[in-house]
Image (cartoon, rainbow, N blue to C red):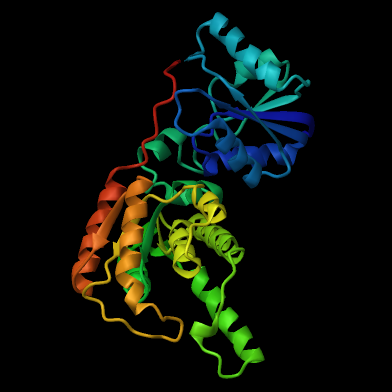
Length: 359
């Protein structure tokens, strides 16, 4: 098999899918060095930097670079070709020996680079997928996407509320409901509350020093809450990359801002900065009414439940987060939640169309 010193793969990767990765990996096998050029136009809804990051994560052995290319495609017009090549050559000024594509324009692109054209799976038999198909139906093509893209596209639903208001029960029930739909939904994940795990360890450590200590004896420092928030985010991202098009989270970094107030009496700017990273799409607020308080050994705030419900609502409204309040018995709450999640999924992903192409 011919080996090339420097190969090139060029594309929009909007978003990258299994066909793109097959092309890149095939090129890597045949080249001493491979450059992947990600070209994005300003009208497209996924930023260039994000696509570059996705491709770097999937292909750490390749040199992934990006360029903004706002020139419409017209493979019949030499002047348009010249304009595109000016963008390409500024991003990849080094000599290229081979250009790997699955497109009909591969021969001309390679000629303009002074390189050999290598066509890989032009009929898409290995992976019957395209960026157009993924943008039109991400759910139907979810299995063609790798973890970084799934993590970015998954609709993230957060269940939050005061102590003993059924957040964990609801997050697990929603996960089971969507898994039962089968197909891609069988991979639906639920991210547990890291703060609870942290609290259990904190209480155990205190009891090791002071046998007989109880939850009210545990004292939190403000520095602990950003750690909790960051770890929650890390686990959320990992679950989103491995799961289905919807992810359920039993609390999140935003909820941690209110928990900081509950234990330390004031907001934490650092936790707020962690929460500002975004990524979530819907919040389900479990109201404290209709749910009896149960002390599970890590709770002592029955009298604070109305205040916490109010603070969650105030902060959700103040920050412009979309939320639905869950009230009534569990079955009613679950039905309300499913309706809200289905509406979120029905909104779609909102990919904007790329610039028009003339072939």
